[in-house]
Length: 302
Image (cartoon, rainbow, N blue to C red; front, side, top):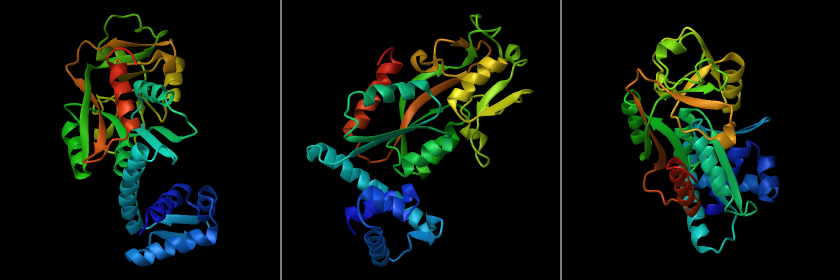
């Protein structure tokens, strides 16, 4: 088993096609196929199902890919530190829908030559944040804990050999368009918000409500509208006078100046925002720099 073979497996899984992977890897399709067959023979499992529509991971292959990503990530981290920059480095972040996570990513990328890196930022649902870090599709994940979800999320992290690192604690705010009737208030109550649509991020059909990004996920709302991305959420806030719940940490550079966060007065809940990593992983220099940017932004400026 070689690092090159592990790299082949990772690229094939990402493209879903032997032909596309061969093009990306600059080798012939027969050579790639033979390399995979040799690896499968050596390790005694079938990694990919082949069909006319492409390739897909088997159950054994999915497990193997998790370990392959981890080993190859450690190789890339060592190469980044000691090879003098002779390989294309990768850095990815997966996060719940937080503008500050994207802003810190933007400021980090500005410090590097994008010709030398493959950068990726993924705003996604909570389950995928966890899964992306488990598989090392992303090096770092950003999410929050509360009194309600802490036990469940902590258990999920422990089962998957992940660690949660504290960044900041914050109160809960109502996030509103500045033209909203309640936007000018110093504080609002949950009952005052009831007449307006409550906007939530969709977490997938099979996700537990413990994965919800909105802290009051078990409350009954007369008016609920789900969205899958932050841009749509902002449009709904403006077009329908909807609201959502947030940490109060917003980024005007990305979301624009037309939105505001108003404290919720009748609430004792708090949010603990942090980042997750695989246990015992060597954090890349880029990852360290991203965390520094994140902390700087949360403390008042990148």
